[in-house]
Length: 459
Image (cartoon, rainbow, N blue to C red):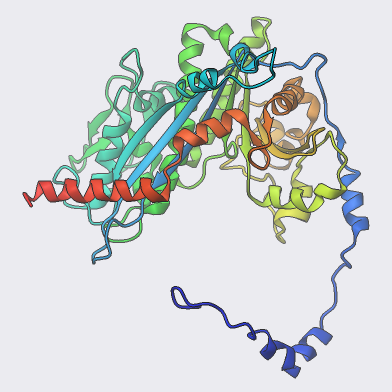
């Protein structure tokens, strides 16, 4: 590895070229299967013509979300000191106003209307203790993180101040009765049970405070002096999906028919990773329940879309891109994923069984852009047909998704943009308001933390 600011020598490759051992090694190598355009063409032939609504089936409103974080150490001294800043942004796009952005006379975009759309963004911020930070006088970072998570998720962040918080949403996702399998402090079983009123309990065995947010198990990745950035990432991922559930539940409880005309777009897969992964099961059940109710009312099901800009599926798609005709679609079944994307000698019976709640698709638009999108599984849970392989087969049967695939393709076609590769306008807007730039944004946050800690010491 080079030193910081050290550049590589221009003749470093010569040692490999002159070394006879390298030539001997290469002489003993052969392709397992000769790479060729023919195989890529064969894979491209497995794509189908993407469905298209005539006219396009577009929602009345689109809600897009994105999240970002800043959790770098705030100084270069030991022990390392870390504070996590997380931001989740949501943008509401009124489709009628979006269509009105372009002046019908000169065909230019009205900047004032664009500015008004930007003002519809609603960023929500969270601040969390990382390594070497004592929160509320608690003597270790892990328990301080637990308390901070409870404090942050117990705040009523709604404009109408209805008294609902993300902590209440966690309880609602668990049928208004959330039980922990064990106390996070002493490990005694079973742990406390929470409802919509009692969000904080005391363990009967050790009398420690136990919070409803311990359900997410995010504290399990926290240490006093280690790098806690992974736990911050898990929290960012979990909070974004809990906020999605909060939007859905709020509208479903007040005006369920409105969900038929709303599309939700998340920047990332429909999956939750790490310790909070069990949330994915709750979200799958919620979306299924909502869509069942909308069907009973004779309405279209709600569209929830996950969009991935990077990752294994997108890397595979970019290899195939030049062989794919425009306007084609493929559902990513587990056999295809294992053979051409992830590999592995012993694949699971159902990919993403613990983490994913949505099915991946690859879509190349008629304008030549590639998108990896996901739609929630049309099942209450993953026990269909006994689960495992039976569910893996059922989840890729296109007929089960009804018109949702067509509606997703129509939405992507409507919002695809030239500014960034494979981007949609609502997600780009959400990302703009969620992102924290390294310079100057990250530096400003570092200075904020340092001044805040200094003031506590009276410096």
